[in-house]
Figure 1: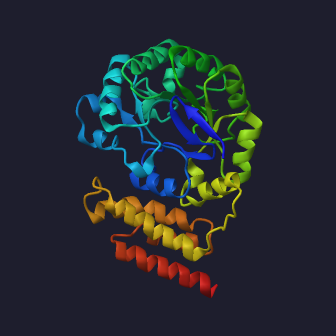
Figure 2: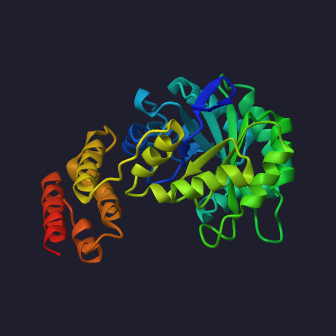
Figure 3: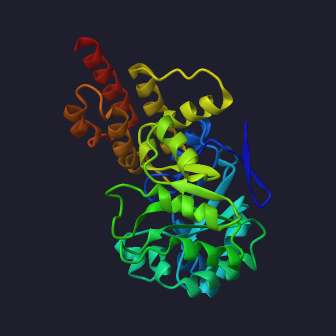
Length: 328
């Protein structure tokens, strides 16, 4: 097994779980880690939210042993706020602090944060230096190919971040304007890797073992990161891990998928921030739907997934879905 080192953090060279707001919560990260994700990152945490003692924001910073190695990802546009937020993050003992400079959603970029920082590389570098000045752990940055097809500056941006002290970089091969559509550009990831000396994590369009291997082979990146392809499919991490460990991978049958769906829902119910069953089950609905996606009869079950109110409902749903598969 090969490893990559980000600062003093040693990570298996298999596949990491990408930070995904409203998806990759603690339950999701624990599950994916158990299935072989070699590294996890928190959901987006607002620097100003942390500095203003927002309880919900602080909850996002909690790091459990099952999720390690794990980064807390913070975002913001002000170096001093980001510095203060990083100091607060250190109280939660993350392995890494990751700075988001790639989020394309309007409510983030309209506040000059996320991918908007790719239009102001000087400020981006100031933020990295500010966070580095107080961080006792490695500092990484996640960014994109560029702001638009007319503003592709990932290579120059990466070089500035490296010079500012970043310990590693994660690049998603799409521009802000592309959001999550079109095809991720792996050539830009290769160009970034060739331009810097620090580790580079490649992200975008990894949806199988084959595409993971292509990410490594075509870009030379140090680590691959998976996002949306893990929806209802934590098994992708196990398949990739088995390949690199040269062990047999046994794909899950439908019974196993339903078993893991119910286990995932139990994990959601166990999280302290999901303080009641109704709230937790609302979160579980989309996950239940994803575990069925692409299987026989999944479309007809989508409405049932989005009407789940209790864990008992989820158990009945799984039984009905299995019965459907057996009778098809």
